[in-house]
Image 1: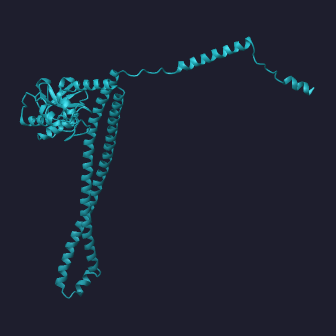
Image 2 (image 1 turned 45 degrees about the vertical axis):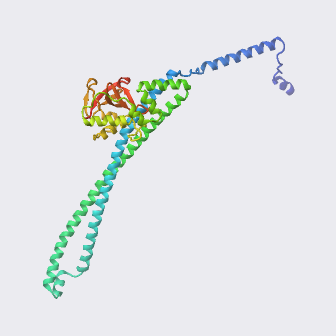
Image 3 (image 1 turned 30 degrees about the vertical axis):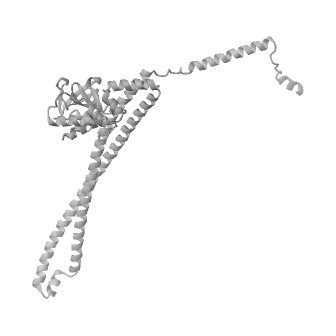
Length: 368
């Protein structure tokens, strides 16, 4: 009976398909696999086509523009960092001077206390009684009274100095925090610039040599390329200066003439973000250096330089005026007359002459 129950629960042995049944099963299995593959493929994202050369060029231009915006923010942060660093150094010097005065006062007070201890062991009346020269003793006592007044004054001064040092240190702590914030801001803008320029180089590397040459020609045309630019690229900065066309319009005054002359002398020098010369410039660094050569101090950034003088309309432009571009005031050049300016365009494009109508005009300022 037990053997019978065991055999009743045993699963029947399955036999493989054969003949027509086997062919039918194989067909169904293949169809199922094809369906599964199709379903998997339907969920996958289609491969995006490679960008065209025109798309690459447009994106590179945007990256260069964004890098210039970040450069001006970097310049502003650098100016603030320098001011914060100067404030910290000034406060440190002040704290050191106050500490020296405090130590001198403490030393004087200690000397007076020591002298009083040595002479004050006996009661003053006893000292007078025992003195062989009462008149001399009374004179010394008067000096001691005056010394007591001086001691009180020293103590009051020490308290004031301690309070002053505490205030200076509190201000120094605040300026140190501000300095750390400015340095963090500098790092942030520096990283943004480097990232955007690296992205631009990477995109340009995807172009063929012919496409890249076409891009450079188009960029030169947009930023004022010409015979002087060709000389600049060959490294003949001085020759480029002599061969560059000079403005036929006279500068309104001697300072503007000196600024324009400096800018002509900078033609051919490379664009380097954050640079103010003498070997390289960014756009606002060039205009700042040009006017500094004329004896005028300009702020560092495009968005502060635009407020450094009197606003003038495009129709009023004269050599030496600062001309600004883009809605965010992210680019500046020095007007030289005849619808032309000298500016530092972008990485890879040295200082050059360019028409002012190649970029969206945002305004102009007359410095002097």
